[in-house]
Length: 394
Image 1 (tube, one colour):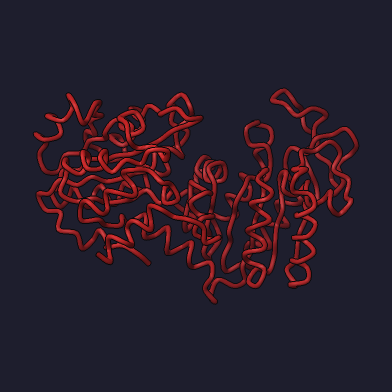
Image 2: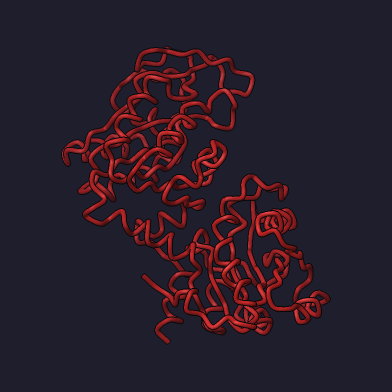
């Protein structure tokens, strides 16, 4: 574990800059997709407010190279916290006076740092972080979804101000790291979506620990094709076909059980207008597109999940962008809500389906950013986390 804990921070009557994750919850037009990461930051914000700190929330959120509008995130935070969260534009210019006059216990969200300048990975300017640091007395990072990013506020602020790890950040690390503990067995991997090479890496990462691998979505179709199982015209990741075949071979040598869908929802076109049919068998007919797992598969996976001590779910079971292809994923979200062990849900789409089915608060961890979770799991670079560790040791 790394970083000073927020609970020990001397925040009384202090000005606190706190990083939160808005990137994983906003659409490219700034519309709020869901509010999971805002709810996750809520406990840290409320702790600071209760201790009469002035809370200056910051976030850097981009899509396709464009900075996102955070004003809707500010409005949603106001609703969640039941107090005003002011949205401050031009915080280093005309908005600075507003920040300097704020009373203890007040909250504001600064304009997207990607819009202000000096924040992006290509620059990550320390001079920009110095300007931000001048606004506050302490820094808190409660944006675990951004721990893999090299952005100025995330990597420089912990060295410029006393740095602390937020409550959700600590919880995130605790649950991700717990997947390696002995008491995580029996471990079940529930893998879907179309990021098939990522799924291969997860399976290989847990070969010595996993008991059962449950497959759905394009991940299942790619693995099925490698086994010469009929998948019709279903989406596959052609670049991952060979590695998927090799991964399954290795999993079986490690005595991990790989479970393919028993039935499917399929359609003769892959579109929002499609009218899927249920196919009560493992094969998908020629010319048909797999859209979702079927009810027999949901029932079978539910039984297996009940026996697990730990479940790691990454990737939906179907094309959840289409309303008619969500039932499989929704059914498993309900199964996971009843799970008595540890449950870690990874990835924007997976977290979204769990949230929209009303089960966000019934799983152990919702990791909105799969990239951040995978960086920890696969021991990849984590600049923001490394900055907190370094500040802790200074």
